[in-house]
Length: 601
Image (cartoon, rainbow, N blue to C red):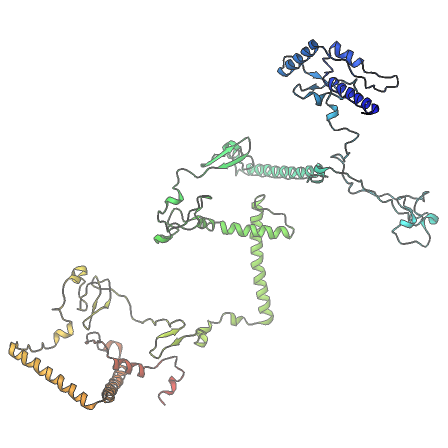
């Protein structure tokens, strides 16, 4: 190896061993041997620290040093103090607390070199520094040396002046000198200062608001005191009532008095904590055990729909009708309208708030509604006065004037409604639904075997007394209607023997065979259909003639006085045939038929 390289290696090894041994020394508890070692480091008269290797500690000194460190860690010995008088934590490693000997071996152990250095750390603006607001500018009275030759301000030169170039500058006139521009501070904010929402806030602004509210409160108390004095002077209020009113003032309430069921109030934190629910109340999910009833949300403990909706109970009668019922009942709607009015009034410049001053808002809302109604009435009266037409506002509905509506109704050929709303059934001028003789249904509500009766007791006798369920169980086959009882009973046929019954049966079979043979001889079904059509036409013709007779009969009855008309309810009523129904449809005249007036021509 090269001798120069070997010499350099030995020198470096000496330095490393010196660093190792010097780093183990503690400043405040240095032993005499350690002091000698430090003294062995060469320091020149010029203050240059030498790099001589310190002397080694003996085993006894090393043991004492370790025992002292253990005692400090256990708290039995006082902690080591740095150069600033601060205690050094004994649990901090030695390589952190000790100053390297090659930097300054004369220093005692300290943590100063581990803290931010003032000369290296960036300097930021303090918390009280901010841009100046409302700075008053003062203008000079004469031109100053070094100022702008155009406007006379000291903050810029002529080439940087932003004013209009004057014909004769301020340097020569000495008048109309512009004020100096105010240069704002160049703030250098740190991370927190850039994100501080209250940075630049002046606490005096809030103090002015507090003073304003204090003045308003004082004025209210003074006004109330004057009012009480006036009432006492007039004799309307006694001293006992005055003391009672002062105790029940709503302005000062103690937090301990707030004791509501289902709530816990903490007077220290001034907050109200809502419990799960009042234990005396029935749980919402136990109102209706039907799984298809209103849905209960266990997370929010909400049941928005009415749990009794499927039972048919009135929501006003049940104790709980869902959260939505409570949300949109009572004064909730009025409260929402008042809140909306408060927002609109605040946008227009009125300082009102629903929670801060509800009385003022309510009075303002009432006056607004009154003024709005008056404005509408005045506007309507002015329009009617100017243009007229008040008589058209009091006109009856259009349906009564024109006897027609815009409702579209489409009927079938038989009179059934296909599209649109069916015309309302015309009410009779006679009394309807009149129940007599303990009947719960009217006469004609029951039909059986071609006869009308009462549905409540199945009685076929008009104006009879109701027998209820007992009458329904009785067979009324032997009972005949009143008009049938007046007719002569039919003659009873004599019973036939078995031989006669056999002969009649054989005769019927022979007739059927003859008819079938005749049909086969004809050889076609067209003749049968023609015969059937002829028969139908004949029946329809007879039904039309009967319908004409019935219409004429109705016209003659309508001309007779109501008190002299005969009863028609006691006549025999039979189900109409198909021919009679067709004749009725053909002869019926519809009121809304546009060609009805031309039928008689």
